[in-house]
Length: 193
Image 1 (cartoon, rainbow, N blue to C red):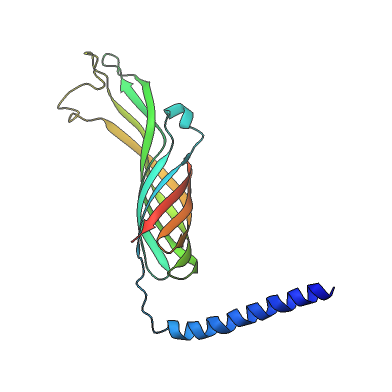
Image 2: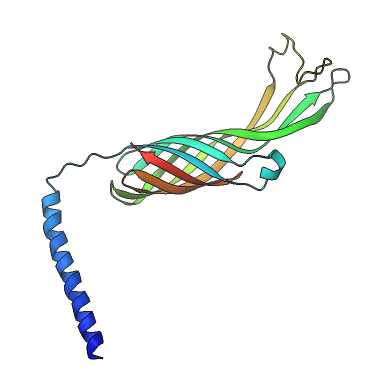
C-alpha cells in the first residue's frame, strides 16, 4: 500500500510539473506566429458491394481548402456501376452491352469538430452526381457506337444524385480519414500544404 501511495504521489507531482511548464510555455507561444496549412490534397481507396461486378476497387481524389472553422472542396471518384446500353440499329430496342466503374463528381463541405491548426478533426457532407448509364446506337460495323453526325459522335450519359459523409483527422501535414457514400466506403490519406 505504501508503494502505491508513493507511485500516485510521483505521478501527481509529474503532472503538476507538466501543467506548470505548459502554462509558462503557452504564454510564450502567443508571440510565435504559426503558418497554417489551408490546402489538403487527398487520395482514397476502399471497397464496395459492387466491386465484383465492375472488377475495380473504388478510388477518389480530392482537394479541400480549410479556414479556421470550415472546409470546402472538390472530389472526383471512381465508384459504383455504370451500365453501358446499346440500341439496336434496326428495331430501336436497348440492351445492356457492358458494365464498368462509374465516375462521380462531388462538392464537399463541412465544419471543424475539434482541434487547432496542428491537430484538427473535420466532419463534412459530400454531394454530387454520379454516372448511372451510357447509351448509344450500336454499330453494324462492330464498333461500340454508331458514328453519326446526328448523335454528334458521342454517347448519351445519364447522371443521378450522389451523397455521403467525410470524417478526417489532421496532424501537422498529414491527414487520415474515411469517406463514405451510397456507392463505396474509402480510407483517405492526404497531405496538407
